[in-house]
Image (cartoon, rainbow, N blue to C red; front, side, top):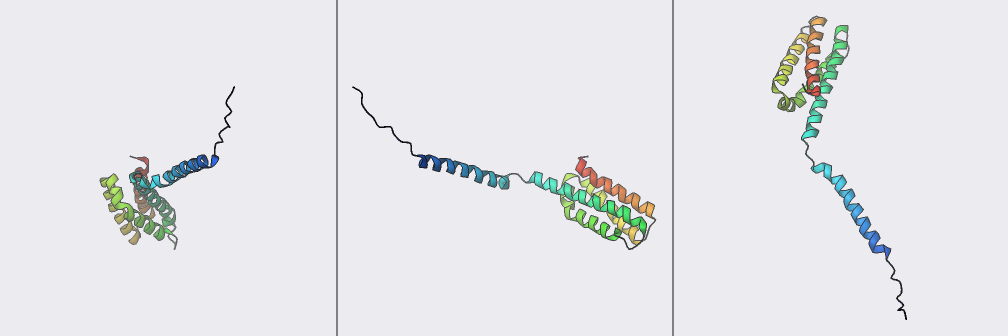
Length: 140
């Protein structure tokens, strides 16, 4: 004779709660983890982006300066200089010699602009500085 045993019902509520808890923990870890990750790469990316921004401003300066009108040359130069100054310390950590050279060249460029130097001379110096700033992004 066989013994009758009623089939045990699996309650889905405790299983669903456990699965939901595991999913919630995974989501929280995925959201919180980047905040605790090393920020040195983020800092490096930000510094390189500011060097690129300064180079782009010098590009605008090179286009606007030869026009010798009330164009955006002065504003572009001011933007390039302020962007460079704001990231100067971090750029010096990457390459101090290049950063010092850029700072000196920017000072010379500013003096030449104030003295209304010939456009060819000024734009050549601006191009040199721009290439040095772009070198931070290329890793050279």
